[in-house]
Image (cartoon, rainbow, N blue to C red; front, side):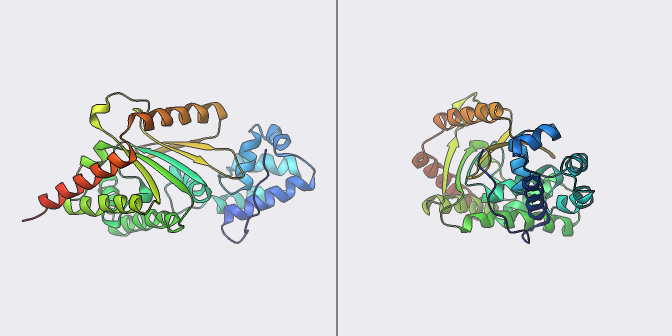
Amino acid sequence: MPGPRDLDPSSSPRALLGAELRHAREKVDLSQEDLGQQLFVSGSFVSQLEAGMRRMQPDLARLIDIALDTDDFFSRNCKAAAKSKYPEHFAEAAEAEAVATRIREYAPMLIPGLLQTRAYAQAVCIAHQPTAPDKEIDKLVSARLERAKLLDDPTKPLLRVVLDEAALRRVTGSPAVMVEALRRVAGLVHRRRVIAQVLPFNAGAHTLMGGALKLMAFDDAPPLVYFEGPGTGRLEDDPATVTRYELAYDLLGATALSPHESLALIESVAEDYAHEDQP
């Protein structure tokens, strides 16, 4: 298994904890697989902990302290490393997304978070939490837009999305909000920053009807798959599970419109909203 990349320990508490875990493991001359066996997790999970991609839970931290004879260092520090500006069910996925080299995503009902505009993100957050105060909504929106800064890099991560036609047709916020949101997606496609396809309604049943999916690949750690539902999410590193959903995603892409046809549809729907928004 490839070793973890060099980390900047000052970047986050989770990165610091991962760097300390790597140091403590190497000090006792254990491989990631050897330590994983003692912790009852996979070697790839240990790799992801060291890379700052996975959250260290208290029970696991206690086992690490025992296995590596680190007193209670990891038990004392895992809570600080677990703090995140993202909802708990999404925190690990957001950390992984930030260091992924390739992201493939299927969005059945929404424009993916990395592609959202502020107005669209605000409408989504208010719909999800209709009784939340403005301060909480602003916090969620800001965190989502900060994630989107990944796309400021001109080349990585490589991002490919399949949008269900429902994500284009469902008016989120207002027609004006949809115009801005869809034109942002189209703009990213024109800049060759995102590969986008649309799964049309007439495609019928398909491989990912169960819900949203995100596949993430890395230079120095095993790939991950993230499943998300309303208020819940699950990150998986099981190779068989990842392989299964990589195939499902490939089949979905083969069913969807081509990138050229998809761009034409996105721009056409945006124009429809623009005319609808006129007095």
